[in-house]
Image 1: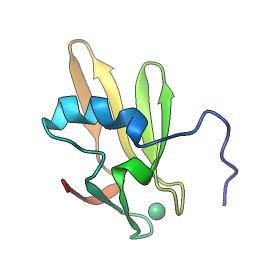
Image 2: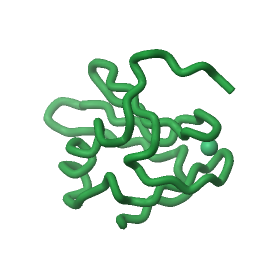
Image 3: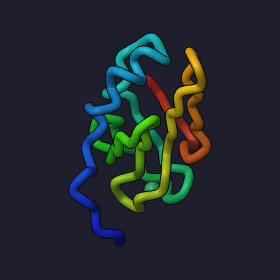
Image 4: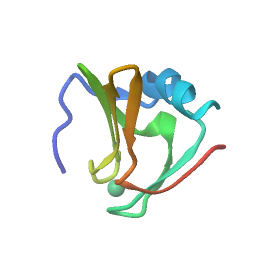
Length: 88
Ligand SMILES: [Zn+2]
């Protein structure tokens, strides 16, 4: 288990950004970690907002679930760490 540093936020911190990308409320979406299989609400995940992007991690195993990086006017979303993401 990795110690969480004090820049760690929760999924509410990325809710607005994900809502913008997916066009729906995402803090209540169920995110399934591809590494450990834990299902948690986006609001319950660990989020780091690091310029210029944002990283969402599994609270159980700290694997990276999702990365958002700005790409000009677009935002690139890497969902590789998620085996499922279902809007709640
Ligand atoms: Zn996990």
